Amino acid sequence: MGAVVGLVIGYILGCRAGEKGYQELKDSWHTITTSEEVKDLVSGGFSVLTDVVGQGRALLVDRLQGDEEPPHLRAV
Image 1 (cartoon, rainbow, N blue to C red):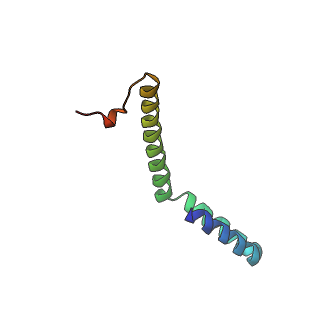
Image 2: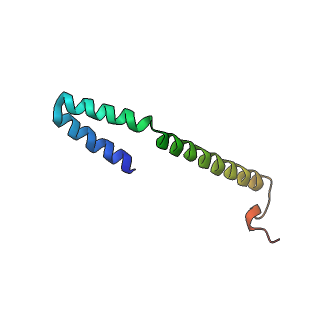
Image 3: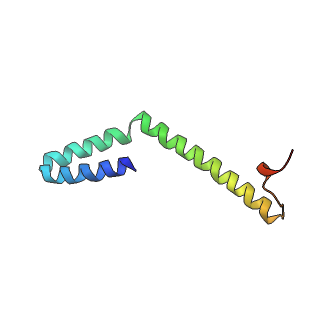
């Protein structure tokens, strides 16, 4: 969320700075989006999302099959 706010603020300031400010903003955006840190962050986010969706799918299947409790709440 902070990145989006930063982008909006940067856009507004870039517009006020004219063509040179816009070019600097464009160059900065390119640097950010091509950095290894951002690529790793996005990749990690997709991995977490995949895990969460898989867990949700398993829970939904259990519920649809009529299990009373989710697997992680069953007594061992």
